[in-house]
Image (cartoon, rainbow, N blue to C red; front, side, top):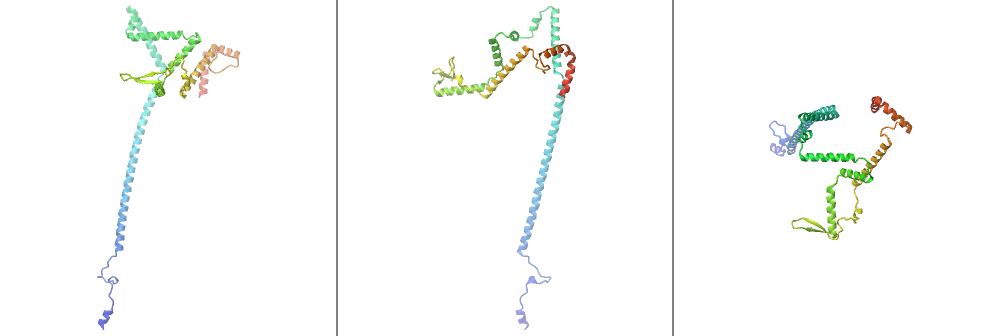
Length: 300
């Protein structure tokens, strides 16, 4: 009876018992979750360390840039102080006074050398010429002759001479564009060679010579090809500027002939103008300081 009951009794599950000597076995899902948590924690620690390294590197870069800016500011301040001191010294020195002193010094040296030479019984011009070479002396003489001719040629002679002087002045002020000239010349040669009007011949020494076949390439007295030229904008502006300068010079000479002043108009008619001129001749030397004070006050 007891054996039968023991056979019918089901086997007990070890996990259901709470006996002290029983061993509990972990499930596979619990071990996987633990490993995942450890991996996540390690990744978080690594990310935090990388972020801290980036923050430290950025802070270091900011410090380096700040130090560089401080160095630049310091050098700029020192340079500005030096330039300010130099400018102050330059403004404190009157250039007209320096030129006047140098001119007086040269004049005094000339007179002293001339007096010493005359006392010694020597020729002053000959002794003075010892400091210059023959070429320099000839150039100086030519320059003085040219200057004297220019002074003698200031007065009006005729319209032809006046036009010649204006033309020579314009030539002195003109600055030719040699690069554009060479470029246009090469384009004209290529165009003439393509049309058959010009033949390029190479000599024995390798030099290229342009031969005009029918005499139409090079300009002559009967050539009218210059009428097809179209000047650029800069040349037109330069011509307009020359015309304006000539007109201003003409107006200035006309005002000088009439006796007009370029200053402020202080008269209402010709009679009042003559009266003001008479007052100016007698009282300008006494009222100059007062008028300058009024002008300075107006400017301020």
